Structure formats: C-alpha cells, structure tokens
Amino acid sequence: MTRDWSTTRTRHGTPSGWSKHKELGEEPCEACYQARQEYDRRRSASPENLQRSRISARAQNKAYGDLAALYPEKYAKLYAKYKQQFTEESTQS
Image 1 (cartoon, rainbow, N blue to C red):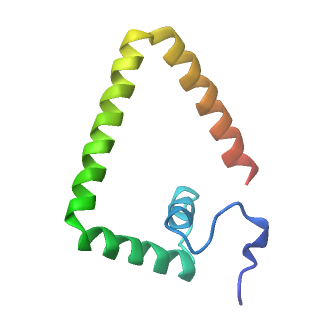
Image 2 (cartoon, rainbow, N blue to C red):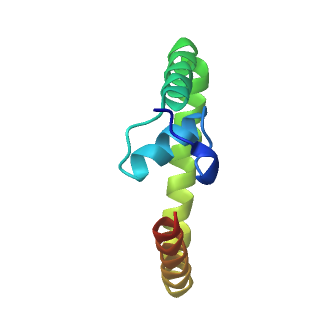
Image 3 (tube, one colour):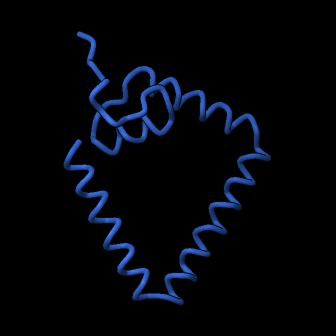
C-alpha cells in the first residue's frame, strides 16, 4: 500500500523531510531517505564546504549564547513563545 503524503506538512524528497519524519517518530519514506543519502554524500565529498558550515554553525551558536546572556529576559520570553508555537504545531500534524 502506498501512503498518501499529500496531507502532511513534510517536504518529501528533501533532507528536511527526512528530519521531519524522524521528529515525528516515523520511518522516513523512500524519497526522503534517498535525499538524505545524497545530502550526506555531497557533504562528505566537499571537506572545504563542511569546514565552512561547521565554522558558521559554531559562530551562530556562540552569538546566540552571547545574546541570551546579554538579554536573558527577552531570550526567555522568545524561547517560551517559540517552544509553545512549535509544540502546538507538532500536535496539529
């Protein structure tokens, strides 16, 4: 039986679709599995891009941490807001 994915919010056939399946506790569909495999192959094939991505991610995480330390009340409010929003979205799907 083929599952009808048209009613889900998962972007099938993409690495983000694979992540959404995992987030929802589902086994990824074949299209998402293949997209994730291709993504991993491309990342492994280009160590320069991988290094740049890691540097960017580290810088972003450090900046978030510094901003949270500078504005702890605002950070806490935004965090609570988005956590509630994402929780509501995940229960609707």
